[in-house]
Amino acid sequence: MNRFTKQFKPMMWSLVLAVAALAGCGGGDSGNGNSDGGSSSGLGATGGVCAEAACVSLGTAGNYAILAKTGVSTVPSSVVTGNVGVSPVARIGLTGWSETYDSTDSYATSAQVAAPGKLYAADNTGATTIPDLTTAVSNMEAAYTDAAARPAGVGTFLNVGAGTLTGQTLAPGVYTWGTAVTIPTDLTLNGSATDVWIFQIAGSLDMAAAKSVILSGGAQARNIFWQVSGAVTIGANSHFEGIILGKTGITFGNLASINGRLLAQTAVVLDATTVTVP
Image 1 (tube, rainbow, N blue to C red):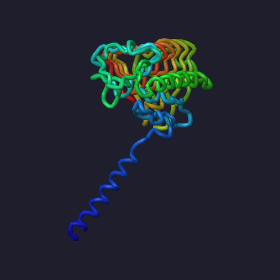
Image 2 (image 1 turned 60 degrees about the horizontal axis):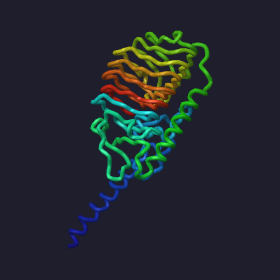
Image 3 (image 1 turned 135 degrees about the vertical axis):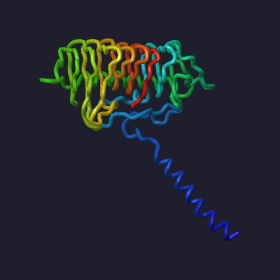
Image 4 (image 1 turned 120 degrees about the horizontal axis):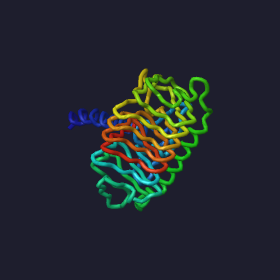
């Protein structure tokens, strides 16, 4: 019995220490204001968020890979890593997802949304889903306003390429266009992991098919913000990087992809799109 006790105690303390270590690994986003504060809906922050001083704060909108006010549609099969939310539109605004709702009507799941990601709508009556979405949409609108209000780019940061970004490599900073912006070729953003880019676009944003936003030097998608007044259209088979803060709609062509978030004040349209939170 004494021999068993001597063997068991070290094993027990090893297990306790392992559990404690695992518990300390959670909540990596808790210090950035993008957590939902432990709401009973089970909605938590997904992916990384910008933590630099120059960042645009997403608030609880950072809990979503996709958040839209009037709807999110998909032509299957899209692949979304992160949460999807719509508000004030009800679940009728989620089209093409083939949702399965939980027993408390707090959220839905879909084969196109990788676990633990979920879909939330303004008429999910369970838990705290409705107020969570209301707050997130308000935070999304505030983020758009914040990005738009940053001091405009000057000199080489103002109206780059007269709105046509052909073969550009852009350093960190605030870029401002009083017109629409088109990306007809690959676009490179070069900077460190702590650098921040804010793009203020007064018109629409259009990216040609089969092109890419390329990050170099350690640049992080979570530190890139596209504040766009008009519609955003990403061409088929193209790849995009960053957080899109759209005043209107965001549309991705067939087999396009993004490492970032789609936060739209109208609708998001996907077509076999891959959306991955940074």
